[in-house]
View 1 (cartoon, rainbow, N blue to C red):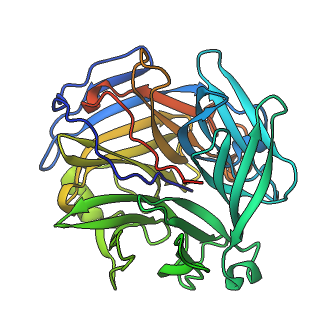
View 2 (cartoon, rainbow, N blue to C red):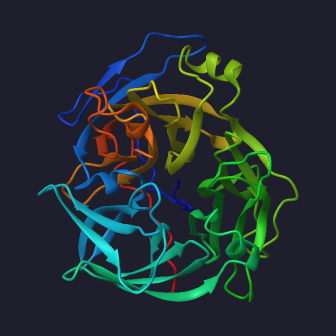
Amino acid sequence: LYATCVLLSCAQTKKPQRSVPTSARGSHQRCLAMASQSVDVVECSVRSLPSSAARRWLPEGLQQATLDGKQYVAGVYIQLGKDARQGELFFHDPDCNKTLDIALTNVEGRPSWFRPTSKANTFVVALEAQYGLLHVDADKRTATFEELGRLPEEVAAAGPRITSNDGCVAPNGDLILGTKDCQFDAVAQRAALWRKRPSAEACEKVLPAATCCNGNLFLQAKGQTYLVHIETASKKMLAIAYDLQTGDVGAAPSTVIDFADKAWFETQHQGLWHDTMYPDGLVHFQVDGRDKVVVAVFDARETSTTGHALQFDITGLSPTLEVVYTLPGAPRVTHPALIKLASSSPLELWFTTADEGLLDAVGASKDLPNVGGLFSCSASHLGIEEPPRLEPLKL
């Protein structure tokens, strides 16, 4: 349950046309005007399925990553099955439809997210109550863990119930370290959003009461910088004032999108909203200076057969729904990423999906063939040519 974290300064590009073209890797159709506006619907295509049921359980943390000089569609298998305390990284090559599954050799734990560093084949990672570096050997398909630090004792003491979740590297080098309560107790709010500043000896809380921290990004709005953050259990996208120079954090976050607000969603696209629509990971990009996000929706219903992700314009922290992405046969969508693997390649929008108990609950179903799979569609309708840059950790 993740997201990307970027401060974007994308090149100015032409505005996207509202008429969405079809492509060989995703069909697009124009919706009729509903309520106060019209919304595009984009159907994505499954591109790859994990090699085992265990790897379908919880793929997450999707991103474009470089390994041995080659670009991949990469992410994490947070845990290899329902009760597993072990996870892996994956690096998928869509040209040959092969995936390098990278095992952690010297440490037990569930990797919740990773990001690039300034050193080749080395990634910063959160691993339960630890954070550190993963040194990846692609030939051996292994990674060794080098600890940089630990979350405070209150996290370790509550493990494995409280564990790391989504995070990122901030533009000033701060590590943003989200945690989650694996019992998803939204009343107790035992998790928190932490940060580790380069100059600090210990982690400190950014958001003290949370349940499942997800979707982090940094943007400029209303004359200041904000950390935009998803709290999945409360179904809210929040904005936290965040001074990158001093490290000062706003006292109280403001709500950008309330995914529990049926009335607002009905003004955007009638019939889309349901009461188990949990926002998960996200990707942020800019078009002509306007801030856009695509948010994965984890559909907790056992009757759903199609997944969704939602694209919003959140410029000025004022949201408007623009596009609904559909993922047939995989209702639990966890993370989007914009991917362009070569200069001559088209920009594509990719998604991870997860099982996380769905197939155990409903059994084998011809309506759910793609659970845990990777999906994609053309991103030609977005009006940008390059993916957003992920902030690396400088070593």
